[in-house]
Length: 97
Image 1 (tube, one colour):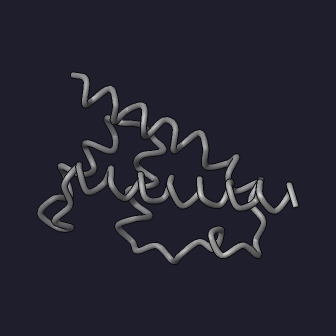
Image 2 (image 1 turned 135 degrees about the vertical axis):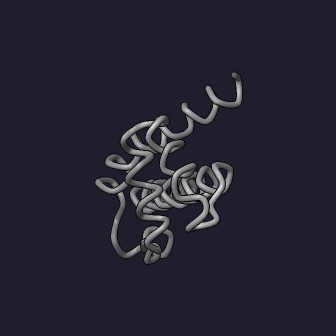
């Protein structure tokens, strides 16, 4: 049960931090340029925004199609969260200068 709670907390933090990161981030920083996302990445992000049960259902339902495991979906969300965190750090450094 603890890994599930950790996953839920990670998804919740990523979802809640998304509006903050996009509003505070300058568009000229290299860390803030959003890479184009694939269809699978966009769908994982959308399903994660709806909640953990929805994301789990999506991954289980589409596993034969996308060959995506829940661990992979969490890794995608974590990578996006790290990118946004780097963007916030870069914008904070730019504001401090």
